[in-house]
Length: 222
Image 1 (cartoon, rainbow, N blue to C red):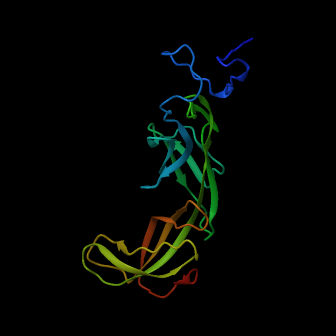
Image 2: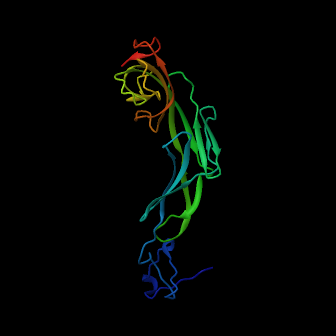
Image 3: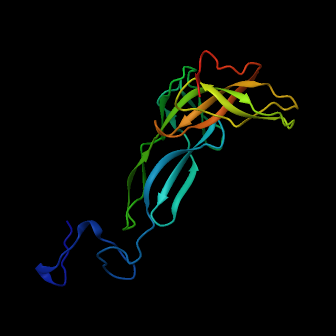
């Protein structure tokens, strides 16, 4: 049993959820004079600089801002669309959507749905939800026409047609590695989006030279 008596007797008031002990005072009631730098959010994210992508976990601090680390032991909602592996430094995700021209959604979950962290202005600790991340992936096919042959190994190109209206992956040049450029290229991309109607990040899988610049039967003219 705990009894507390204020200096104003029955007129004294106490906020029971904001008791802070201060070593410089016998008792201190209220918030600290300098509020703590506490965590407001924890969420998963991807390092999209390459494929496979590193799975990252960010702690968003109230004063110092985001602090990002490699995630570990994360998992996906559909292992047919995304596979998690660990390279020793952290989790990596590889996306493998079917080549059907459709967008497919997959969720990456954290190892634990909550973490015990400093999450209050009063410097106290509590459980905070770790937010998962939703990804939309697809295989995007684009046929492009070469516009010039500069002899640098790169072939400047413009799109002819695509197999899907959204997303469309339209490369501005194709690398052949020599002085010759095919008149056209059939290119396959992995398209990754963080919202259904957002823009796509396009990662080239393969581009095959083609002598015909006519639209393919399986794609819609741009």
